[in-house]
Image (cartoon, rainbow, N blue to C red; front, side, top):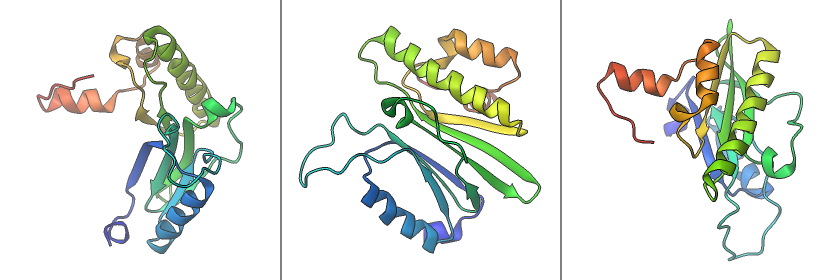
Length: 177
């Protein structure tokens, strides 16, 4: 009922551990509510009653309106490809937004996980810029503080904005990273 009542709403989920069967089942519910979704590659099938700890690296974008997964797959190793998904959505017939959802690497080694996540971000930005859509959104659970990263400064210089930080500063909120 919630999904049916929502239009032009986007839900981005990180840390999924969905198999192909799970993705199909969830997509059936989405289609029934007139929603569409795009997923990173599913986990290989697993044995019943086994834990998926450490395998929850997948991501999903669901949208209550027109959504099209990308025509071209990500050219990344499977481990990285499972952490990123993108889709085109149309909030209005004359506006198309390109959304990328990323699940950053876990901080087992702060330097290494931040570098690996920044590599994913670089690929995402290059892909979006190449498409030349006016509206581009990069979201997700990056697992590091982007405000203390050279990567964030570079994007800001190119005109990108951190909407969460903008919202927080306009409303007197403090975000904890």
